[in-house]
Image 1 (cartoon, one colour):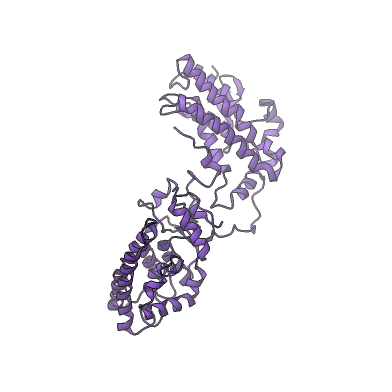
Image 2 (cartoon, rainbow over the protein chains, first blue to last red):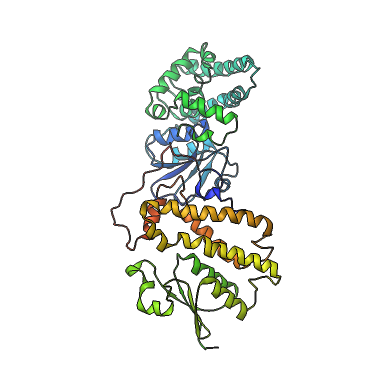
Length: 243
Length: 215
């Protein structure tokens, strides 16, 4: 039996589970620097969905969080009926379907299928970026950069074939939000050179920064760097960096 | 023994009353409750009627077998001596001493420092910090003690009076903790201490936004 006293009155350690979600809001369990959670926040912003955010310390997860998502990962949605939805892409699709306003996913089956195919084409990028971040000091990362360039070329081809600014057509749609968080991080990770040979992708990045949802959620480079340094040291302070 | 059910004078938020309620429940003792609201009407514990019953003007008080007993631990030990099963104090004197030590640590060393009347005197700005300090230092001590006494429960593997004291104290701690995600914990404290319900158009707490500290 352990009282773990410090957990009652400090932020870290075991905290009590949060109460029910107020009517009229949806809650997202998130972390300020997580690209997967950023997908959900982008959709919430883009659709103007009233929400509240509970940030989870991913280096010191409260036990109750595993009752929200057995994987213990963010993002997770919880509504006022107590329904829980996890897996970032699933949360985004749920929000698009459950809430009114601009539809981010197309109704047309083929167009929807195309968005999901681009999602698959993109799928190697997150693990590559993670490997790049976690590489040891003596590795120069050039091999990983080359692999990233290859993946980006596939995406460039999509834009070339579609002849549109965005991946779903001439306006921003779900697929753009789903892949954006990793492109936002290229600059601070010094990976911008990987889009040097993919001009349409570069233009897409610039166009994305004009979007109100995207720009409202942009993370300041210094803050991200500060977070990352602490995160790689497994510091429990990482997730609150800058606060 | 007098006929008629025992009568418990109790308050729903009182951790001391809660200890006795658990004991009564564990021993399957049927009783009536007379609620004494510590906040309403200036505090019903201050009525002449209740003062005559318990000059300390505190809950719990138990009318049983023709006598009235105040002080939760005295009540529990009376119940133990007159309704011995299931037992709440171990047979072994050393274990019994440990149970009493933990119970008194909580009932004498923590709870009185953070109860309603003390918090009122400490002043609104200081209340939360004061209460948290009382609980933290008590729990720090308990943590160390439990390392040597605890099995499944506070002392060994059987529920005892110590556990009856600990559970409500933990609930107090949770109620008083500053949940980082809930800016309303201080508002809750003021509701706890206020005799009146909050006015209908009081400000709603800020929506939790993306720059909240982690829980």
